[in-house]
Image (cartoon, rainbow, N blue to C red; front, side, top):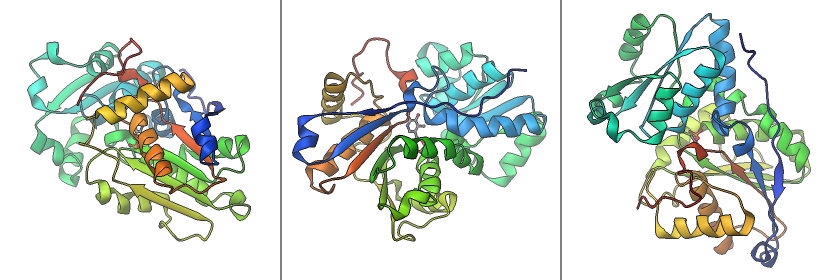
Length: 320
Ligand SMILES: *Cc1c(COP(=O)(O)O)cnc(C)c1O
């Protein structure tokens, strides 16, 4: 059996730019897009502890949920192929069931990696977390380890311990960190370990999640629960979910975000994905231009990956 690796250390890359100088801040990007080609970015950290648990429980299958463009679906399929689990993806939208010619790259790749799909109607998908449904599923798939949508659970949170330790080793003086939010597991994971950092006494740390779904405030109690830390519990640690940068909603971009993405690529030669990391950088830039980031701030942008859905050409698709 292929051993399940514990962690991968990625670079923290400095982003020198006259604009950042003008505002008196220093900016770095944590390149977790480089951690794995197919189990990329935050998905790696969320999956690994769950794969260890699945093996430990003697499960031979992984079953999870997601939309057709879900990076978590792609990562789960790739992880199953790599580490020897049969994978099942329960996908939102039954209109896709009979129309494989309409499948996006994510679904095609997941299928090539051996995933079997079950397409769910949207009302059924909304019921996927009810105890009745889950117990029914466990009976039908006794060999399967169930992963929630986006892979977010308490174990996923634990996967960010090493990430935060590495960030603090690479830049102990960081003061602000920005990360994209879908289900909030990544924000909770980074926050869980930042809030418990031995470095907190040296300088206060601020962690910001940029929501990519519209009206994402409902996520706050879940994130707080996973992080086990309210937003203002610590004098030296604050976290906040910023919901005003989601634009038209999940997986919908705007000309502004596309332009920013292109600016970022030209300035730093780093690719972002249109769904998550573009919006994260967009949110950060808006905060900067609104003078919400103090002079002297040491800012880290967390590149959570997600590049699997990008077209092979360098251009960003216009999904307005
Ligand atoms: C899935 C994903 C996110 C969202 O992570 P959550 O833990 O669900 O909030 C952010 N960035 C990228 C690139 C992703 O693929």
